[in-house]
Structures are given as C-alpha cells and as structure tokens.
Length: 242
Image 1 (tube, rainbow, N blue to C red):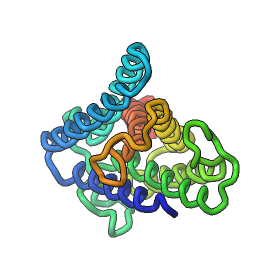
Image 2: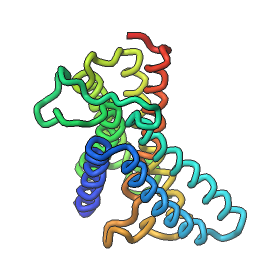
Image 3: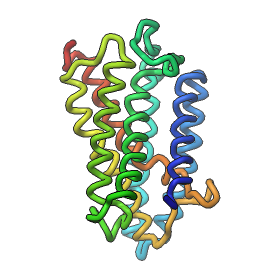
C-alpha cells in the first residue's frame, strides 16, 4: 500500500478538475488548463533532455507535446465552452444527491472512469496481482490489476451514461466508450512510464513533493479525454442517434 498517498493525490487532482470544470467560467478554466500545460511542458522538457541523443530528445518532446496539448484541449472541449454550448447536468437527471451539482456530464465521463480504473487497478494489483504486464516499463502493473481497472472503467462509463445524463446515453455510445476508455488510460500511463524509464527517473517532476509531477497525475486522462471528446462529437453530429 506504499502508493496509496499517490492515489489519494490523484483523486484530489481529479476532484479539483471536477470543480474547476463546473464552478468557474470558461475563460478561467482555460487559464487553469493552460497552467497545467505549461507545467507539463516543463516536465516533458526535463525528461526529454535526459535521453541519450538529440534525435530521441526531439522525438520524445514532440510526441509528448502533442499528447499533452491534445488531452488538455479535449478536456476543455468536454465542458462545451469552446463550442459555445452550455449543457450542464439536467435538473431532472437521475443522479444521486451528491452528484447534483453544476457540472458538465461529459467531464464526468472522462474523469470518473479514469479515476475508477486507477484505484481499482492499484487495489486489485496490490492484493492479488502476480503476472506483470510490462515489467521493463512499469514493474508495478499486473494483468490482474489491469483487467480490474478495465472493468471498473466500463462500470463507471455505464453509471455516468445512465445516471448522470438525462436522457441516458444510447448503447451505441456507451458500449464502445466502455470498451475503449480503460485501454486508453493504460496506454497513457505506460507511455509516460516508458519516457520516465528511458530518462532514468522515477517521477516526471517535483511539483508535489514526494508524490511526483503533473504528468504523473494526469497521464491516463490525457488519452481518455480525446476518446470521450470523439464520443461527444459523434453524439452531437448525429452519427449516433438516440
């Protein structure tokens, strides 16, 4: 359970993003995400500079910038601010009382499954995990924990799609999202772990003393958010009908 403080910090970061997405105006949310981008950029530069040659440094930094910028922009896109829309959780949504707050439902669809997968994978992997999924890249990850994370992410997608949205999202949206969001989060985590391994460091940064950097906390979200943004775009464009 030595990683429990890190998981707790991740939950706090995601909770802060929940509140920021729902409680502050669009321009201020853009400012918050811009700060995350700058901090993430600094961490990427630090990691890339530790690689052995210029070509690898340039490739790693360029790819990292694309993932970082794309993930954070996708999260902003999910708030509907950049599209000129303002859909919030509907007053008649069948949500639990503690969820009836002024938040964008598509933000729930990105953050809650990502967090659920992270916590479940860690808990199950710590208890019964035996088979390593990528020992050279991320020695702590196991197949048992990974599968548990995928299941938790799928359940969270179902919960958000049926309990937070009103009307519920159709199966044509929920099914593919439930299948893809877990693997997307895992890929984001493994990509950052691979970069850290190549750079020879444990954490991406030191902004959270003893707990790592910004990239350590949002690596999975950076690939999950674009997946949810694609689902939102398909839903709004009429590709998926109710």
